[in-house]
Amino acid sequence: MPQERIRPKYLFDQERIEQLKTIVPEAFADGKINWEVLHEALGEYLESETPETEHFGLSWPGKREARRLTSIPSTGTLVHCAAEGINEEISHNIFIEGDNLEVIKLLQKSYAGQIKMIYIDPPYNTGNDFIYRDKYSETLKTYLAYAGLVDDEGRKFSTNNPNEGRFHTKWLNMMYPRLYLARNLLREDGVIFISIDDNEFSNLRKMCDDIFGEENLIGTVVWNSTKSVTNTALISVSHTYNLIYAKEIDYFTKNRNHFRLPEDGEGFSNPDNDSRGPWKADPFQVGGWRPNQQYEIVNPKTGEIYKPNPSCSWKNDYKKYLELLEDNRIVFGVSGEAGPQRKRFQTEAEERGRVAKTWWDDVSTTTNATQSLRKLFDDKSTFPNPKPVDLIKKMVQLGDHTKTGIILDFFAGSCTTAHAIIDLNGRDNGTRHFIMVQLPELIPEGHPARHAGYNTISEIGKERIRKAIANINDNSKSDPKSAYESEDLGFKVFKLQHSNLKWR
Image 1 (tube, rainbow, N blue to C red):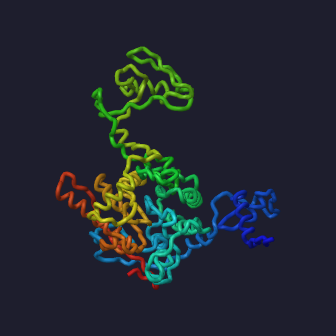
Image 2 (cartoon, helix red, strand yellow):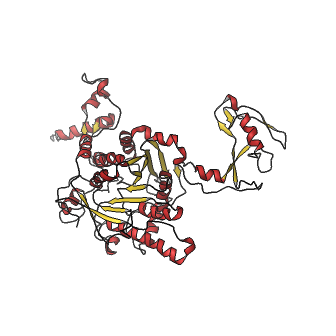
Image 3 (cartoon, rainbow, N blue to C red):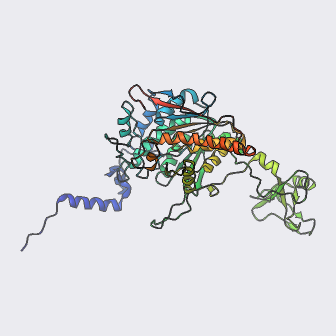
């Protein structure tokens, strides 16, 4: 009789672990068993666990160290790189090449409480993104290796592997100190926009609640970022999230018109030749039952009587309604035979602005942005999946009603944000300024950008700013009527340097 094969003990253990993982998945973290969670799931609550030790919020391994990083002073300095910018003597725009955590620390000295708006498009942690590792006392070559960009021979070797237990932890530890310090830079009326996808959206939301305060969440804009369909996917992703937090939400609740999009004039007309100009008919009915806004309105042409729908009210009380009717602000449809509506004049709408919605499908897609960037660089492929200029312009219009603020982007990439600000200033006579920060991340060998003469992403960003300014100047020369009016068509370049870390 043949002897039965005996399976190694570790195989039995692995099977049991997999079975346990299926039954109690919440008890596994970073590839290991969390005994407290397992005991709780099985009903065996630990004696040491008390309500005082429990708290709501996002926690992860390394959070304490991430907090500690925020208090370590920078050892670097910013060195001006003469002749790399344009109109450097008069420009207030800045491009900084270096690690953004160190740069944000340095900016605390001069820009604390001075930034009107921050926009960032950080690594999405898809498994192909590098994750910064915050160590500075090295040469640039070694630093890039620490950053997960290259090996000792200069070849890219490291990404944040989704199969690693610390996949989310690495990303959170990278993001936390940067966002924590970024908050200090915002003005009282400042806002931050952060683009992200599904991989880290939930973690980013909880982390921002921790840093900025849950009460300061303005909202989440969902951008319809792609129109194409991925046929191999279970469900084709066509959106990108954009979280928006205020420095102090109370400022915007008291000044709601300071967070508005400009009125574009669409839908306004003047069919009755009103001396006050074009107008649009708005509903005169609002949701909610209010006793002083319940009354009958008689159509003067048809005699038909109108009352608010159930659980609704008229927009104003009866006395105010009579004043509006006398002032020719109440209309009854195009033919005069419908229910009451209230005139809203275009001049009023332009003064108040337009409330933004959370679904944005009226701006370009990632594909459009890629094509536009390629055209800007003489039909050369330089940067993957850039954000569209009009997407960032729309955010800036929301985030800086003054048209005079400083806009910071410390994951600048190809510098779409700078391009958007330059273009927007020319179109609305704004005087906004930008600060762009980008690590000199090496472009892989064989990439078309290398063949075009660019070795790092920061080089692409600087060149994009130059080309955006050149385009405006060319347009002004060829068609003076369409010339952009802008006081600051230029920028300065700085590079971060440490005693032992030199970027050249």
